[in-house]
Length: 114
Image 1 (cartoon, rainbow, N blue to C red):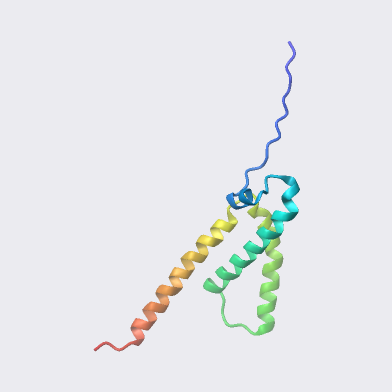
Image 2: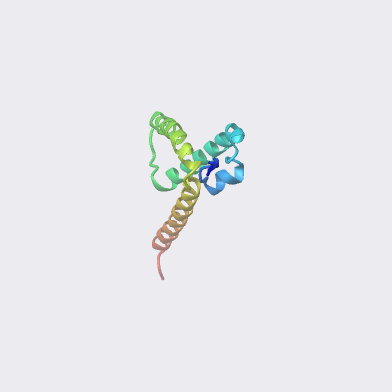
């Protein structure tokens, strides 16, 4: 009895954004990676500014962003298979709503009640 071994090429599970951009095809990697990198950087900057940023001197701000851009290379590799972009988007929404509510609350406290 002869058993034929069938080799199945299993593609890794990609995140929805990576799949939508076509990352499941290895030939598209050099097209998809820079786009994912730009999206991760944009969302990281938004989340950083909404949640963690303080007024810093210009040189320290440049250092923070350079380190963020370098670290986001690793995050982008993870974003191919993990929902990093989706998580950053949700974090940006939550922090944005929080900032709006905080601003509204401070304006209500600043206006004198009659």
